[in-house]
Length: 249
Image (cartoon, rainbow, N blue to C red; front, side):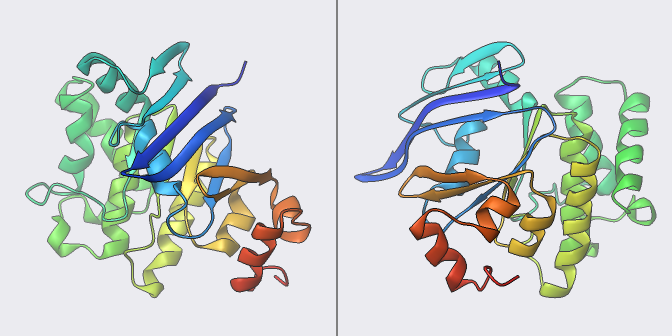
């Protein structure tokens, strides 16, 4: 039995089928990258797992419990979100709270930890992502890369079973991308289980244990970096990589 099991996940917007009966097994410590053209359901898959989108069908088994993603109580939504922390493209920090307070928020409000314990955990994670000198800075005084590192620290501080990362560098200036990718790399090296959507293909090649290529709402290729980039068996995948000049990396 896998660490996390996703079964029959389907989602449509109007007549547009974005996810079509997706099945996925995730093992503990996996770093899985979702790649593919825009509009193939990568971000939607993450949002369904965190119940930011309600799918037409699908279940997820996590922490020994199976959740029906179409019918659930508010208690189950909260449980699932505690297990599946999301890192967004646009950081989504509380503007009126400083970096330390942003990371402490979920620990005190959701996990109901006392302030001293929450502060200790938040400090540890902010130091780990290189933000020790920005603890009391508000988002407006932080660069995009710094805000994203605070957002990653906030997610990791909640100790999720699955970290969902939705294009964490897409809103950043090019010179800031590297610092965030290094933070993601460190999270992967620490053994976190990560499902990642990104267009940073060299990074995917270096950090992902598995790579999934989505096309028309389905996983049409699933393999290691070597299998995906060096010997792509799927013709649509080959064309996708040709278009972004990845086959000769």
